Length: 104
Image (cartoon, rainbow, N blue to C red; front, side):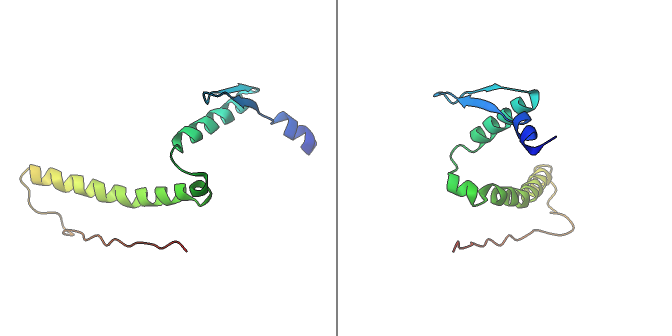
């Protein structure tokens, strides 16, 4: 199968209405592509195109990955305190050092 034929088979025809609703014609795969585009547009509301181009989503995922364990540990400590246990655990309390990165 030629590259031109593959491109035609994979083409997705969709339109966006003034209300932001996607209409689509095509295969189930093209419907899934449009569904993904619509989910991305909704999820990125409030994020500028420039921020997206500068990998802000990757930065946010990295920060969330660092914060979640800290929040889980905090919840465990709060549960221990509410149950009358004062020992924070074998490793003791953790200190968090915040740093600010400069964008050049």
